[in-house]
Image (spheres, one colour):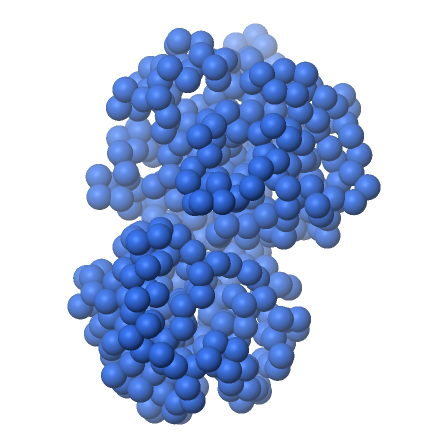
Amino acid sequence: MKILSVTSEIFPLVKTGGLADVTGSLPKALKPYGVETTSLVPGYPRVMKQLKNALPLMVFEDLLGERASLLHTRIDDLNLFILDAPTLYDRPGGPYVDEHGIDHPDNWRRFGALSLAAAEIAHGALPGWQPDLVHTHDWQSALTSVYMREMGCSTPVVITIHNIAFQGQFPAYLLGPLRLPPRAYSVDCMEYFRDISFLKGGLQTADAITTVSPTYAREILTPRFGMGMDGVLSQRVAVLRGIVNGIDLDIWDPATDPYLPHKYDINCLRRKRQNRAVLMETLGLDPTDGPVFSAVSRLTWQKGMDMLADAADEIIWNGGRLVVFGQGDHHVEDHLLATAARYPGRMAVRIGYDEPMAHLIQGGSDAIIQPSRFEPCGLTQLYALRYGCVPVVSRTGGLSETIIDANDAAMSARVATGFQFHPVNTGGLRLALRRAAHAYADRKNWARLQNQGMKTKFSWERSALQYAAIYANLTRRSAITIGQIRITH
């Protein structure tokens, strides 16, 4: 089975968050089930710099007014199509924002072009290759199925919602420049509060909708978590399914991790203390017998990082240290930096992101904090479990499914893996941090928490099987006789 995966980021080429980890690891996990994935990704500068022996396949002379080339290459286990369109992607900054953190003003065209190119490929524009199914991810590639249906292409489409808060909402007058007909501006397609929404168009035209945990699949059907899309999703609930993300055990393994100065496994956790010493020295933190808490996250309201800034003193008062690593909203960054300035040697904030530091933090911290106000799945807590780093999480979305709270019953049954808190506010977070700090004082019980976390299984195997089953069901249905026309791919 041939799958075209359409994504705005993919690890290890370009990453801003968990989307890249998923799109980079799922193709590998699907191979044992007879699924061959080719991923289409924009040719950002950091992507183009990593290409070796890329083969030109075709040219789009007029892709929403721009000229673009389609390249093919393989990097590690990934089979890749690269959309090389310098006028759209060759610019400073990140995939979505410029060097000042402001959205690129033509994101509608940049990701509309990505979706249109994907639709053309699905419709047979590439000689000798056509997918059996298309898998799109979030709003940036959601227009793919809209374009496909306008072309009369009936290839099945699965869309995955990684975070429904980001919807690709733009003024309605852009429908023409996107080269979509007026009928696309309807409640059954892209019309969204008098604007257009890329995500809504994808949700309305895809054959199946998945999101990254069963709890989040239920939550987004409600006004509180649906972010205005709950009505659309309620109408399509029959094709909505939550599948928990997995992690790539080859990349996230403390026994082989090249970024850790001291490798370890469940049988030699003492070496984790050596990584802790390296982490603290690297970040200029004073020695302590208390726990080292960390947060590796986008620094945003959604992720609850403002609450962490307000609750940081709870960690300091209990003799702990706090590391915050990530980037995001400037006012949240400033709040965290100002808090750290009050606690020199006891709290460190690093703005930015790089993979080696993320791995060192997991390998050297005692606990990881994820106080998200909503969280579709979350991967950081899964990495933490693997690294014997005890998660402290809010009780929402995938966090509530993947972490077992260390209450008395769970500790007695030896199944606890971390600390949950609810309500999701600063008071709830403070209480959870206090519980974790007190638990750390009992080193025997803490080691048990670490061991129980490291034994949990969150590989892609089970989740990939569920995706493969969805693919197989849709491709079977696409070959069924519809009326008097037999559609085959």
